[in-house]
Every structure is written in structure tokens, then in C-alpha cells.
Length: 137
Image (cartoon, rainbow, N blue to C red; front, side, top):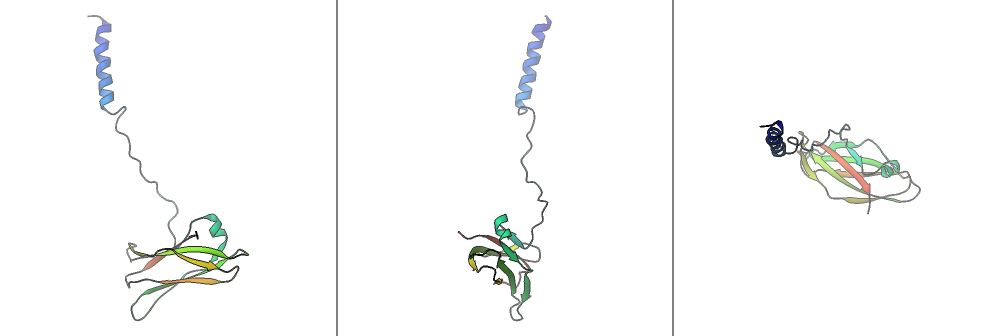
């Protein structure tokens, strides 16, 4: 037997092994990347909305009867025309598990006039919250 006749079976075996292994091995799955920015309590859907509003520190209280969480967020339009903003609130328990998420509500902000958004949880188990803002449609 010559060398050439020996190389053909070896090459075929190598090609079959490579094909069976999935063309180079097992492919790595796609995984989410870690977000370097931890979530806060106030989220804006766009830079434009963030630039055109001013928000204050949310105030949080509980009523004495039902221990329901009340949240008030001061907000003001910094534009010289009325602004229409949608918002929704998500309430979390003490383990930061989502309890309730409201639907979207629309608020009209008068130009340069301080206003506020006030919401309350439906359960005394609410321990934290987040408010999402977007431009009204």
C-alpha cells in the first residue's frame, strides 16, 4: 500500500468526526449581559422626556388603618407648552418580588407649574415601588 491510499481513509475519518461534532464543537448559548446600571425608582422611556421634566424625591407613607403604601412623586414640565405624560407604577414586596403593576395613566403637565403624581398600593405587603414614565400617545 502506498501513502496516498492510507491518507484517504484517515482524511474521511477526520471529516466525519468534525461533522459529527457540530462543525467545530458545541456552540455557546446566547446569554444576557449584566446591566451595569441598577434600577432606580423613577424610569424614563427617553432622554427627551427626562430632559423636559423635573422630578423631586418621592415621598412614601402608610395609612394607619390598612397599612397601605402611599407614594407621591413631584413632577414639573420644563417646557413652555403643555406636556402629556403616561405613567405606571409597580409595587414590590420586601423581597423585591412584583406584587402589582398598574396600567398606564395619562397626566397633563401645565408648563413650568409644579404638580404631583400620587398612587397607593392595593395591599399592605407592598414595601417598595417603581414609576415608569413615557410620552403619551
